Length: 327
Image (cartoon, rainbow, N blue to C red; front, top):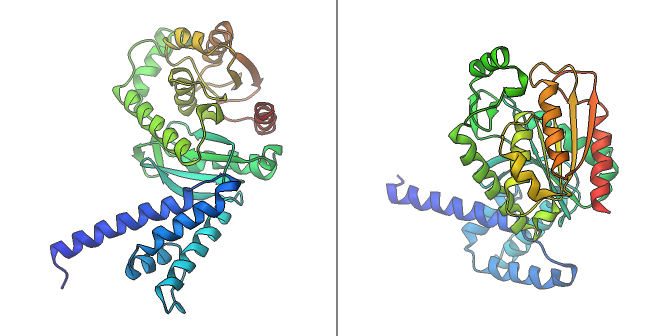
């Protein structure tokens, strides 16, 4: 019967194996470093016990049958790593956890050159916008480039499969809408959870940038509704500017954005909003557009006769926008 100490050691071993497996999958190198990096990885694998090597193989869903010597296990783990990295670079969606966030990701190359983060709306989840990444990679011209799309799941669970980036007092917002009008909808203090979420998402981006040896100039931030507020805030508040910003059904959520935007002169922005949106009134989109444009950002504003949604032409226009950033 396993003792408490045994269970603790097994738990630690599982965490170490999980962390090592992630290193195997996220390790990147320049073409001239491939052989050297592979050699380093194999050297590190040789330091693992037979039990740990078998556990790593199991995490890859690969059998250890036929491995007689430890060297056989090392070779099979290395092969499994190579196959897994190739599969991840096929453009197909896969799930992963980055800095504590559950994500649905897809990429076209083991070493992408542009990272696109997609943030869903209030009450939705990462799956809700995963089709954006799939459409861009499968049907868009940007799919022929070295890109990585990460659809991030918000941290605050509201109900089953329903999440938010920070809480919203819907009753208060409705009251403001009817008493103050749409222009003043977001006046006032913001939930304390917003600051926490922003910091955590910054950590997620930092982890990805480190893993792929990239900079903020390789990042495009994208979001819908509340997710667009997060993307906009990150794009204006982070120490370094992203490569671009895509706003689907956004709003002038924070008054301080007006001052912050002046430090982002020239930042390329693509904005979409339905003229019949009753969730986030079109007036809010206009205020945001005028604020960013007035601060000198290069913003392209596309409107459509529709409600709180992403229009059919948004994806091809996003694809064209992304391609322009890669030139």
